[in-house]
Every structure is written in C-alpha cells, then in structure tokens.
Length: 146
Image 1 (cartoon, rainbow, N blue to C red):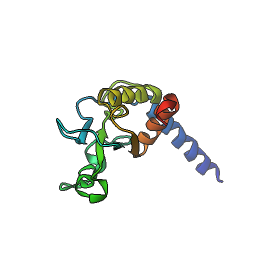
Image 2 (cartoon, rainbow, N blue to C red):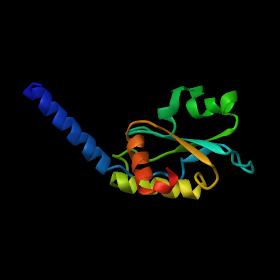
Image 3 (cartoon, rainbow, N blue to C red):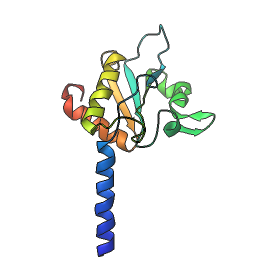
Image 4 (cartoon, rainbow, N blue to C red):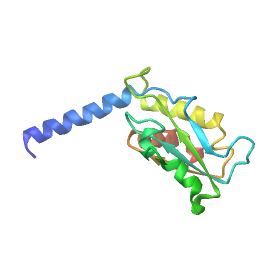
C-alpha cells in the first residue's frame, strides 16, 4: 500500500469516527409507524428502518416522489402480517453532539415509547450506514432484545 493510500485510509477512518461522535438524538417527531395505524393491533413482526449519516427518515428510503420503500412493504402481500416502523435522527451538523452510545440510548427510548419491542414478538432492522452502527450498539447494550 502506498503512503498516499495509507494517509487517505487513516484520514477516512478519523473522519468516520469524528462524525459518529457528533451524531444527535433520534427525533420523536419524525419516528413513526407506517403500520399499524391508530387503533389497529400490533402484528407479531415489525421491520424498523434506521437511516444513515446525513440521511433522514424520508429521503434515505425514497427512490422517487412516488416510491417510498417502507410504504411499498405495506402493499406487498408477503409483508401483510408485518408492521413497519421508521426511526429518524437529525443530521450531525444540525443538532447537539452525542456519541454513538448516546444515540443508541435515544433510539432505545423512542422504541420503548412506541412499544416496538413490547408490542412485537420479532423485530427486524433495516439499516443504512451509521444506522447499522447505532443499532449494533443498541443490541450490544440491551442484549435482552437480541
């Protein structure tokens, strides 16, 4: 590996670590269920979408104005017995600074508040980028969920 490649690798790792350290909390206003609706019962299974760095609960999962992945699952017969939950957190440059562990605890609070673990027997995470690191930290901290 050349010196310039090594330097780029080190700088890239440093930037990724620095950005993880300034990730803000999960938002209570944009985290939401696509299903169930108000008054509907929880299904046994839920799929939780967690976006990545610089994304959000809408743009990360949207292909075009009319194609939003979480809503596509609502229309697919294979997922008719599955609830859909979309978690959101603010972009790192727009909010308070938090560590990945703090963001994971914030996500846990949101999931508890919305009965994601208590209302479902099976929880499946679909994560993009930093969302995967946050969910990994959540599951390492709360092993009772895994």
